[in-house]
Image (cartoon, rainbow, N blue to C red):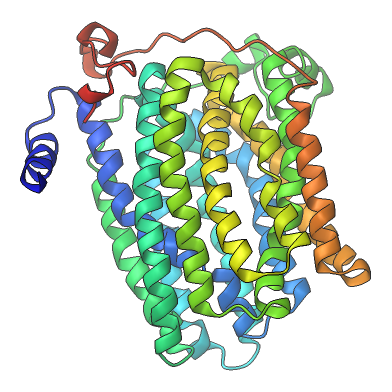
Length: 451
């Protein structure tokens, strides 16, 4: 049995890719094996800051300042990318800076023997700037590289790969951090993550990316598509008239406000109120990743039969379950069990929400629409953690967590109140003029044909 499994893996990944699309999908899987390692390591950022002496306010800044930086950078980055036919150097150069920058995270205890926590939080905030530039181009690029009928399958498989790697890394890292002297344990862990992430950068260089359509300023003025303009007329005519995009943005803003309120509270409740160890934090992250892996297997199949919007409407109201448990049940064992379940639920939310958002954005202006959307979401992400920390000082951590979960629940239910029609499946321009995947019978209805 194991021999046939390995033979199948070898057949899929070592044989020449039949098309540029299949080759790109294969590379998207392989690079994630390496980048997920740094993702697992980065899940200990807040714990590292707390153990270096970071205050509640500093943990709040660690949650809120990167979104503020993203809000300031997203639209200019999108405009800058839209003016380039070859977006690879700017995108992948920014990604390289982020990953190399994590080497400095490992060195901060040596470089700043005093005010170490402040230096760590400040540096992590600064790293969000090149990360925002990469994200501004990465999401539209994925939409261009993958036809809609294969997105659910590819995104779910990428998320499964990510979940498996993160689960393994966080579980092993938790044991490592308990066994080795602080702060050398964290320093070596970050160095290992950076080396793996740089291999991911190398793999991404082999992607076959078609030239992007260049949006000229004259064309923007003529067609009135400059979404980054501060003009109310532009917003009214190009955003508010797109009912699907408006509904997704409005509902998600409220939903995400609750999510971001809870973010700085989790680690403070785990470590300071409940006394969680590094090993517990690693196990907690690993269980959430296992739930995510199982969820992506299940939800991708449900989406194939029911569609993205059907799953979105049913998983969004369920996602506040976990912060309610953390707020109401101060027991680390119960929290571990609940985190597995919320990983399962959130995988459906993430997979459906991302794809519906892609569909409601005009194809030729996805970078600007995502820039506009990201700016609003990041404004929410800047305000909410600071509000949560301020509230926690007056009513306590768990009471504030309950408020955050309630806001998140209202946001999830709003998807049933502000309704919109899911756009039809969009046409896809094949890479290098190859045959469209539907004509080859390799669409999402035939997942066994996907690499």
